[in-house]
Image (cartoon, rainbow, N blue to C red; front, side, top):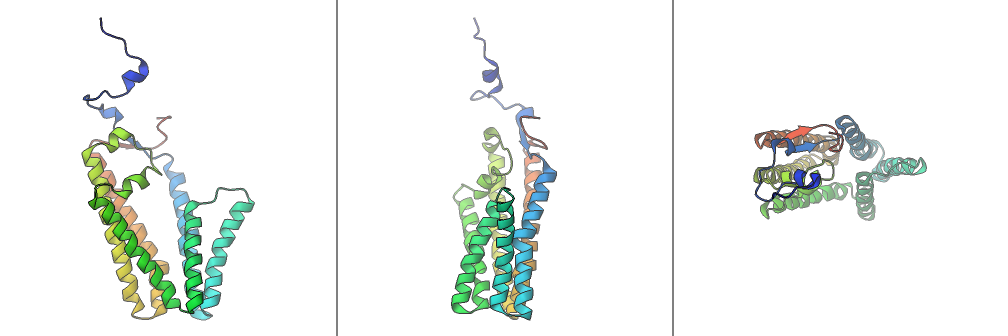
Length: 235
């Protein structure tokens, strides 16, 4: 007599069984709200403080430029805290990094050294991403699961893991290009270097994220994985 399986056992894939095509899905949640939050974070944490530093440095000097960029970040964080809104981890991370860089720049009175610190950071980031890919544990896989619901059986597919490895290499190479671009602009002066860090570097990052997203979607489609909007519990 064949044992009756519970609904949970029926839904769960048994070792050796092929996962039904309907189960090969990745849920993006509410795409519009995600894009709006990402755009707001980009403006608040990267674009505005970078442009403030570049403009004030050009017209006034180093100390007011540091005060303007840091003052903006502290204003955003303080306003969110007073209103009881969630504090962005990315904004807090950027604030901590900028504060550390500002301390070094003030101690040395050098705007050039302030600009060299993110160059070193870009190189370290590139090594981290490419290194994780070479060791077969791409950091992009872990980062993706912070924003997108990806079932374990989808991550277990060889093609999906290869896609995350390729994206890690692509993003790592873009960080090396970012460092090289800043160094090249610094040869023309601090103002040119600030233009690179404040405008061109964020644009390069956005283009890289877009390229990685398109590459990921195409790779998932080749693997037969469907990308859907909404939450998995509501699908």
